[in-house]
Length: 149
Image (cartoon, rainbow, N blue to C red; front, side):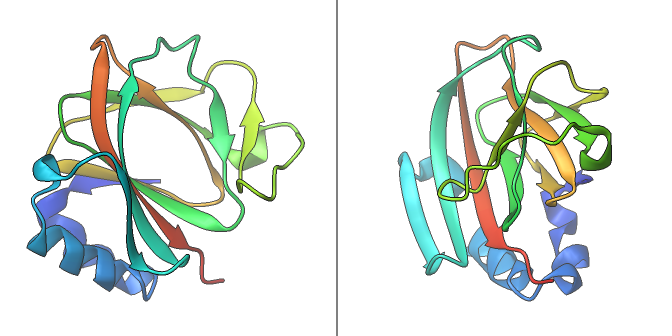
């Protein structure tokens, strides 16, 4: 997991060849003006999901992992708390290959707060519980990037 300011995103482009495309997208788009929906950047290897979701409590937010994709999550409308547990500390649970997701019960080991102007990167080894907020609605973008192993 990586947490940083969007102004520093360029420091991370060497981690995955598609991260440069994310940086280019961030520089050329006003995220707050984007409508809900999927914005295809490079086919199924890189796309942005713009969502408005109901805020969750820590108890409602489920930990999840992805095997094939990396998440870069960026809150747009307000602060978002995200739970984190390393995947090695999570039990073996059923994987949904069609949706590239595994869900887990229980609370996260740690919680961090991300504000607009920041981002968090969750790799396949990072269990995360997103969308924890007191706000009724949370606007955010989730970049889905194919994990190049």
